[in-house]
Amino acid sequence: MEQGTTRTDRARRGSDWLASAGLRPTRQRVSLAALLVGDGLNRHVTAESLHAASRTAGDAVSLATVYNTLRAFCEAGLMREITVDGSKSYFDTRVDDHPHFYWEESGRLTDAPAADLEIARLPQAPEGAEVAKVDVVIRLRRA
Image (cartoon, rainbow, N blue to C red; front, side, top):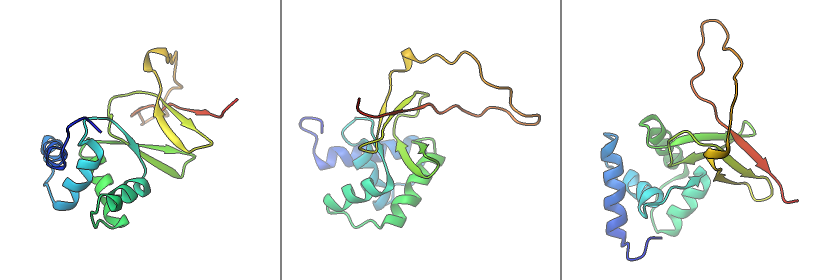
């Protein structure tokens, strides 16, 4: 956490983040936004890890509300959903295009250096479709 950041500062930063996307600052949204961006750092969370952090912070937010709120944040462009293994979703507060490392042993998702990534060519999209985005997840295990 950023040195000297108070709960009020984190809530204000979270409220500003919501306002930047035109989202109504409900109590639950502000509480979760403060946990996500209140210290000014980007992070990758699962709904379950954010729910646990919310409980630790003393906020009564249900897991269903966390899921719904994360979806709303993604739809508003505040976060990106990264799916690993087709079933596990991570939510990233950094919304620019960038690759990720997925650490198989710990189940952690971290940013990978974008400058080192080269994609020379993509297959042509089928007729009537266009490429919307390319997610690059590089799976790692300890050697």
